[in-house]
Amino acid sequence: MNAADPTVLRALAAVTAERAEDAVLSVRDLTVRFRLRGGRSVAAVSDAAFDLGAGECLALVGESGCGKSVLASALLGLLPGNAETSGTALLEGEAGAGPTDLLAADEKTLARTVRGRRVGLVPQSPAGHLTPVRTVRSQLEETVRALTGTPRRARRKAAEDAAERAAFPAGHLDRYPHELSGGLAQRAATALALIGDARLLLADEPTTGLDRELVDRTVDELRRHVDEGRGLLLITHDLAAAARIADRVAVMYAGRIVETAPAHRFFGPAGPRHPYARGLLDALPDRAFTPIPGMPPELSALPEGCAFAPRCPLATDLCATRPEPHAGVACHHPEHPRA
Ligand SMILES: Nc1ncnc2c1ncn2[C@@H]1O[C@H](COP(=O)(O)OP(=O)(O)OP(=O)(O)O)[C@@H](O)[C@H]1O
Image (cartoon, rainbow, N blue to C red; front, side):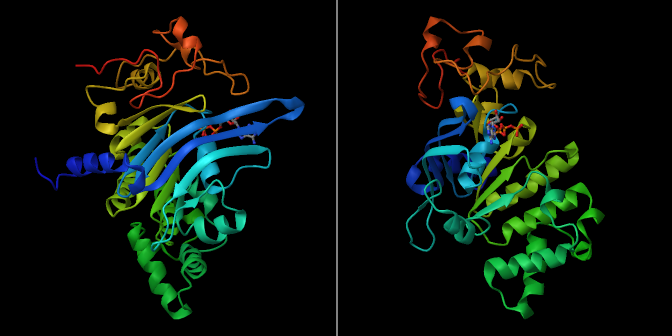
């Protein structure tokens, strides 16, 4: 075994991150409810818990509508007014300072010290994230000014350095967003996300709308930033992208994290243990290509017990009670690893 082998390093990072005290981000009991008219509510996220270490990528995967983006918005304090949030999300402190609870922090703290500075956001739609009427250079310089206070004469160089870190070609810096390809717009948005030198990167569906080659390039670039010591929470429904980049995988179903597993086990021969997670993988065209029967439940009318039971081939009467997470799986009938 070679200690410098990236696979070994990733496995070590995964072990390290299981210890909350080493985490860049440590989330416990994160719950989000949206209040609706008539006293009803949507249980968008329930009791989510995970740790993310430095130099680690955790991929949060699951079908559309399972609560991934709401979880990310809760971490950034960007939920709408009808949301009620509880739990804790401790972001490691800087320079010996204690951690910040992102769920308890006020908007001023989040806007001035967290978003862009301690948490870099790699957006879903880079074209929409970039200002259309300004060149990439001007946007990078403005962000350098706002986030780092770099004096005017040094901003040009700082912006060029930021572009280089995100592999954005210097020759394209004076272009406007509409003059960029999808891949270059993604790199420009990543360059902006990296300016604050945040230890935590949050990427919400960063590969949406990109072709497979660009997906691979984008996630490989994100991986480079992880290997430099950042923690990356990658929110995606693209399991191939997750398999390429993640150290660990957390699977969400109907607002709950139902399984957390090291990526090499999850995507390897052993496979996931939760029947839903197995179903997700088996639905892939390059695997069994067998869709999971049925539909996810309405988050405004969740059953008392396991929300996956109505679609689950292994469900029994036991599943009328909610399974608590045990050894990374919340299931009464977790499957044994495949041989
Ligand atoms: N402001 C809101 N009021 C009520 N319900 C909401 C609100 N915002 C989101 N939801 C609901 O929360 C649930 C989770 O949505 P979310 O966008 O997090 O899913 P997702 O897993 O990120 O899906 P996708 O991959 O399609 O983005 C959905 O059922 C959505 O309808």
